[in-house]
Image 1 (cartoon, rainbow over the protein chains, first blue to last red):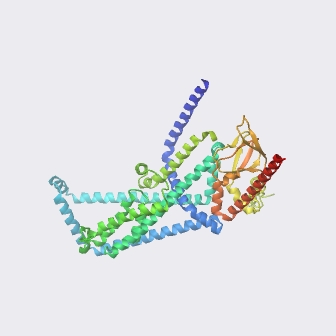
Image 2: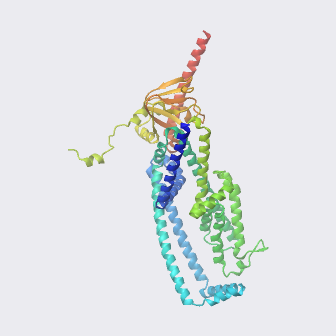
Image 3: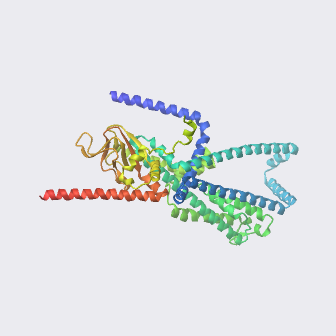
Length: 373
Length: 170
């Protein structure tokens, strides 16, 4: 009887401690959430880069130099990509504005606007025509633009700060990864020590195989998209920035389900911009049957083929079922991740669910073999 | 008088070997290691403290690696603690056990229990694999030495078997 009472008290005590911990976390969460996000990013980058650093350390025998080399190569690659992307985009934009006469474009848009408003019901046309205070509208527009620019500058500053911190955390984690791992392992109680060691190893393996798989499939999507866009150019699609569109499509592919469609958008925009006013492109038909103005259907079809090759041939061959989650679970995880953190949440939803699956499997194993601990 | 600043700057110069390295040097698995290699190994080794009668691992539990006794003593047993406990070995400082777990995924074949408050060094499969990735020469040295230790143990078991067979015939 006494034993039952003791257990009951112990349960209340544990519950109270749990509730106090939750309350404390909810209070400090707004202050630590950014740091935790940075650490999660740094951990993910570390997991991706760790094998390269380890491999380089094997060659040159010095961890510090290995980290430095990998990080410098990464920054160099990223800098070259962003730099050339910006210069190409500005070239494209100036070329577009030079080619399209401003007055013609205004006239074109005006015609589209008139057509649109004509096709609207009468009461909507009245609403539009009743708002004729152009000066007021303009000042509102300017205020909105200035406000957006200020908030955008703030967001860019914040992003740069977070990026710099993630970068520093990644360097430290890469350099001291094995020491940190050892310190983490050392706090595990003796009873669960070997099990904890195995759990950490399994989580590392699961996350790194998932991330590596994702990057390999992103690279394959990028390469195939570039090839596909070049092929479309061969048939007269007049697409520029093919290299960047391909890389963006590859990166967008990292977000499951939604990403592939996001990847098509830049290609469609470029096709529209480059072929505006081109009669041949406007009257183009897919396979000579289906009308495909500005090669839009061709582009969508090309991306769908790339997705199918990647999803059904390349990814299964390269990585297999690295996380092994049911599609239903993937969708639920994406929805939850997207709700909490937006696109970033969607990016990390699947690996985070994979980690949770590994932890739950290990807990199930412990419960089954509790007598051995 | 010695300046504290200079003492601080040159801290770590001519430092004496840590107790971990001294213990590791006694283990045949790490024989022929240079001082630099011992320092590399020291970074991977885990320090664990056990109270008297604590289980280090239990028979049939999943095994992850080997332990080296830095301080204290350990008994290797089969059977439960109270009933029919059969002590297979009593190990002292510098001895090691559990090395088979470095090679296979099989569960532990005996219990290991601390017989005094003990300080152990742990070296685990994942550490060996990570070392093999980063410093294959050192990893291979350990594997080669482990092979030697296991071969020696197998020879010992063989001679025990031969002795027991011949005494059975007599």
